[in-house]
Image (cartoon, rainbow, N blue to C red):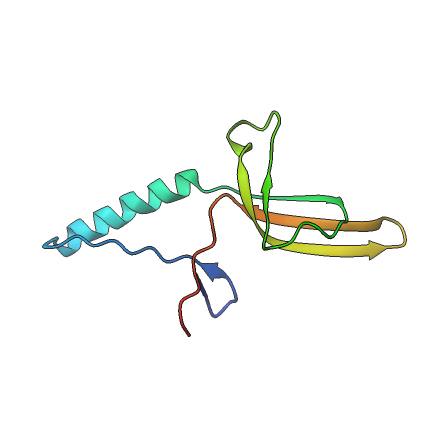
Length: 104
């Protein structure tokens, strides 16, 4: 995973196709991209605050959620304490494991 100049996280995938032409490589890259994004899910929710959920944990969403009912890797947790809302947190998670960081 690598950060862009705008601070966004980008996952890099590498595929090898020996003896392929540039056009064949482009077509295969587009096919793989569509295959990957078809199965990637990113979810977020707000809930009462607690300290067990953090970016080193996995969570399981279950219930009547269709294809969203599965295991997710927590990406970020933003906690808030408000006088009008108490202790809450927003959790963002993805259904794929974070890639190892590339050396800087």
